[in-house]
Image (cartoon, rainbow, N blue to C red; front, side, top):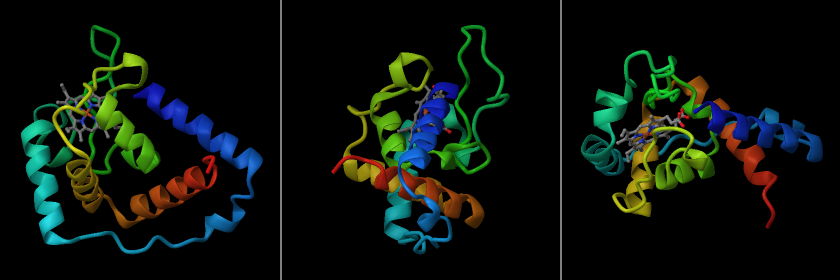
Length: 151
Ligand code: HEC
């Protein structure tokens, strides 16, 4: 997770270097998609594939900030109590599909278990659990990240 975080941080820092992110700072996120069907679908996929590691309602495993004996971190909260909201959506999708970057953590690749529509629903469900402040911060990170991707 630390690796994911560093990658994102580096990307964000690079983003600040090369583009004028000041235009984005005050941007307000559009309302979250709280469509009941979407969120119900997301929670179902979560309960089936993710809950055993990330806990009921995304609370994370106990002592998620403490490395295990293998030097890797336990599954963090996805409900906003951790720092999942620091990661742009593209990064969240890639972690879900391909697992911990470079195989350096214990998040398994899930691309054979969940399809793109299910991942959309999963992320919407996760985001419905975040505080408004976390969501707004996430939105600005995400925007800065997207602005800085090659066309
Ligand atoms: C076998 C246990 C396990 C399962 C199953 C699992 N995860 Fe994870 N997940 C982890 C671990 C461990 C990490 C921390 C990875 C690291 O340190 O690199 C993680 C990290 C993540 C992250 C990054 C969070 C952050 O704050 O950086 C996301 C997002 C995530 N998982 C989503 C999911 C979703 C969605 C599912 C179900 C489709 C899922 N995970 C299933 C163990 C699991």
